[in-house]
Structures are given as C-alpha cells and as structure tokens.
Length: 264
Ligand code: TMP
Image 1 (cartoon, protein in one colour):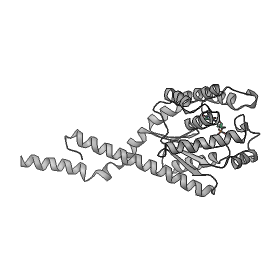
Image 2 (image 1 turned 135 degrees about the horizontal axis):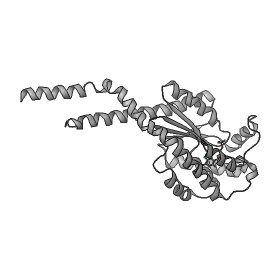
Image 3 (image 1 turned 30 degrees about the vertical axis):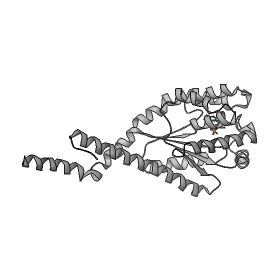
Image 4 (image 1 turned 90 degrees about the vertical axis):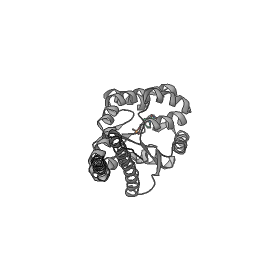
C-alpha cells in the first residue's frame, strides 16, 4: 500500500511540479494546432494595410507561421469576384447581390486557404473578413445585420476571427487619405460611394464593437504609425498569451484525467 502510495505520489509530482516547464513546448504546439485568426478592418484610407504589414512582421519575428490574405479576394476565383465588386465599370449592384458576391469569395477563401491553415496551426491574418460585410452591406447599404448573419452562419459557421482590429478614423480624413494615395489610380466602386455611406459604415463598425467587445477592438488610427503599431502588438500578444495559457490548462487537465488523478 505504502509502496503504491509513494509510487502514485511520484507520478503525480512528476506531472504536477514539472508542469510549467515540461509542457511549455507542447503547449505552444497545441495552441498552434488550433490556429489563430486575426482580421484587420476599417474605412478605406485608415492605414489598415501598413499596420497589417507590420503586424505580420511582428508575428513572424515571434516565430509564428503566418498566412496573409485579403478580402474580397485571396484566391484566383476570389480575385475575379473582387474585380466585379470593385471595378467602376460594374456600375450599380443590388445590395443583396453585392453581399452574396462577398460571401461567394469568402466561401472559396475559407475552403482553399483559411480552414486548412487554421487546421495546420498557423496564424491567419486577413485584410478584412466578415465584419466588413456587417459594416458595409449591413449598415452602409442598409441591409441590416440579420441578412448578413444568415449568410455568415451558412458560409463561415464556426470559423470566426479570434481578434478583429478596427482602425477607426473620421470618414472625411479617411477618404481624403484614400484620394491622396498615389498608389491608387482612383477610388474603386465602393470607395466612391460618398461621405454619407462611409459615415454609416463607421457607425456600423463602432456599433459592432460595442456588441462584441472581447473580439472587436477599436484602435484610433489618427495616432502615429509607431504608437498604433505598439497598441496592435499588445492586442495580438495578449490573445496569443491567452491561447497558450488555455492550452496549458487543457493539457494539464487531460494528463491528470488520463492517469485517473483528480483535477481542481
Ligand atoms: P480594400 O481591399 O482596399 O480594403 O477594398 C475592399 C473594399 O471592399 C472596401 O471598400 C470594403 C469593401 N468590402 C465590403 O463592402 N464588404 C466586405 O465584406 C468586404 C470584405 C469588403
């Protein structure tokens, strides 16, 4: 009996006292297997692409494997759909057709890239994703969030971003920046929608952030590039830390269960 008692204690102590160090690497691997999904959102001209580039550099420096993508687009088919959506020559699209095309491109991207990358344990960083449909089509076009949610349940289902960073900027400034950007030949079909539309989109982003404050983080885009970058890195860092802690707890839990030992 006593012998068994000592043996069990030894087994328990091996797994209990050595947990933090012993599972460090495993925990990271498990976290990575689950994958992490981060999306960047904001009005055109909010500086989103610059910040996304810096965020990806930061994640890679930290040793993560990162898939970078964008919406609408990101796949061959998605890029063709993007052309239809953004080319001025497309002219007027029925708002519901616009929404359906956004989700058609998204369905392809999820299937081809996002879901496989998350299953591999990569960090996926997307320049826009489903929150843009809620803000632009739901609020901007006035379709309402229920219509967007119906598409979203069907196409995205449980594949939802873990963190969405919304770069918030006054629409007049954002459009001014977009117009002044020498890299753009001219405003695309959606950018050219006018100030009232972009004001509704911004109000939409802020309303969505109030509804989902844990996932949607609004950052002020009118600060310096470096200050904004630091704020975004802190948000990503705390998500990745949380993920690592959660997976450590899960591993600890399953190790104790497997050995018939009680967990707290
Ligand atoms: P961007 O790639 O330069 O950000 O342009 C994409 C445009 O498409 C931008 O004006 C926002 C718009 N958009 C929507 O209206 N709904 C969506 O679901 C997505 C992903 C983008």
